[in-house]
Image (tube, rainbow, N blue to C red; front, side, top):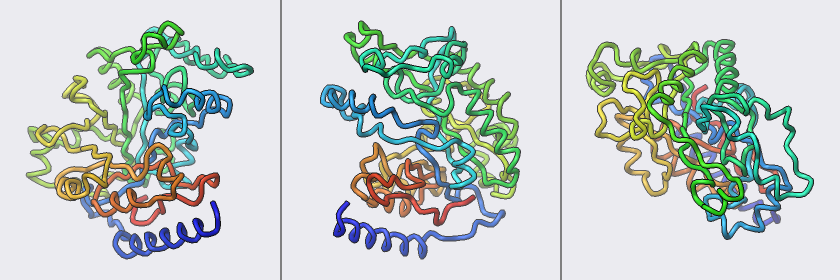
Length: 356
């Protein structure tokens, strides 16, 4: 980054900082309703950056991989859940979960076959051989993770929550993954790339049971409903619960849960549509396109949006999407940059106007 670019980035960040300080910095008293707080979240919170050899190999085929699998969009990683929550006050987390009822499906990382000198440490990845839900981004390609299994990730989050009992509520986004590179190409399947295993009703109930058993501070839809017929009916009748009632608690929210058939009596909430009487969480990932809509929706729902995506904003030191996210009123703002990547510059989401 040359001096002119650095100076421009600094000036823009300074303007954003002052705007945030004036418009968004606030205290969050324990009497404040839940839908009026704002939390800083991390995107793909489990993920580690792929190895340099993997990225170098993938760049040779970037045109064929498509934009969503472009290696430049995979070039980011995160600290452990405990570090994120303690050092950066992250209160929104995201886990990509793959179904593996027999075990071993994601043990062999097929990309390594094509990269000389790149080999997996089988002892490190041995937990992948056991049956259960696995946590990774893209099987066979972008598999480096702080947590191989869902149980491992939930165990660390639960221990942190119990140790920091006064923390603001944590919103845990669970995304059941229903496709992988093996689903997209017959050629890749021939080369050994795996397809994702769908989630049956039984699998979703098993996922539900894991959440309940692993998270002792879990706040459930049943608690939220307070005897009303639906989540929306409770909100319309007696409003949202207040922050003080929810300190030390974890909300688990299933992404696309309604379309997958997640059980209506489950222990997690679901992201859904405004027409669903049991939906109080919405996803609108494009704040530049949906800023006005998010502003309106956030009056009645909790909305999750993104400040950046695929390393693009960080590479360009572009704060437009973050500014739109802040102005929109979205309560959960997700980023890969609660700390900057010095390789590209100073882009980061400042911790201003977020609850901790």
